[in-house]
Length: 265
Image (cartoon, rainbow, N blue to C red; front, side, top):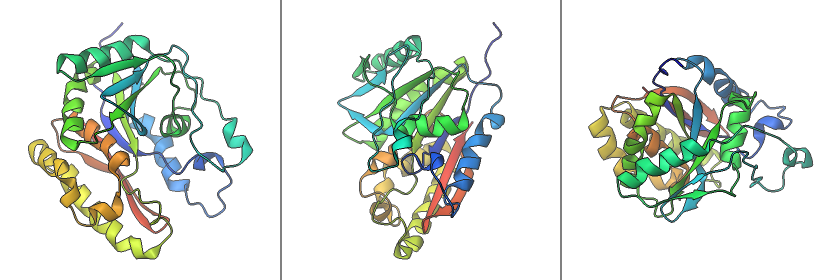
């Protein structure tokens, strides 16, 4: 087998629940879905596997899914019945799960292998749009429930060698995540202020980027944009896995709030 190409990392929006698989007469999710569908064409080659850090799984220390055939977790509520019948039969990758655990344990991070947990909607919903064939092995990595940004940046750095093995590392969250703010025009300006700070931060040199992301809560409108930061921390992991400035690859106003997605080479 040829040596795999080094894969970039991405921070992607996963949308609202199963939004891409519901009627959407206003086209709220059209542009986001188009971004996700177009993502594979921007890769140097099809990834050998995909590692996804989701804002919907928190553990003491870190954990990876470790099933050869992961189930799905329908961890969204009050949506149409058909959205609980969605399928995404991508294989798991126990060998990758063990490699992730080994890389993190070498740096002293508590890591466990979870053989029973399935893929949550922060994983299977965007992947079902971006990689609908479901033929690439998928492993999910949790967040540490302490939600320390510096820790998650360091974990990304520890996982960086996976990129040279053809593993695509995705952080699935939302660059703005305040449920009270969606659809409220009073949040448009604060979300834009935070989004501009995020753009300037992500595109900065890696050392300055890490310093600013570590202190993200001091950014303009930070806590209005993220009352709780679990949907932002996947960005820290994928940023930590790169030593180059990031680029914004998705930008849109959705439900009155500014949203962005980023790539790191």
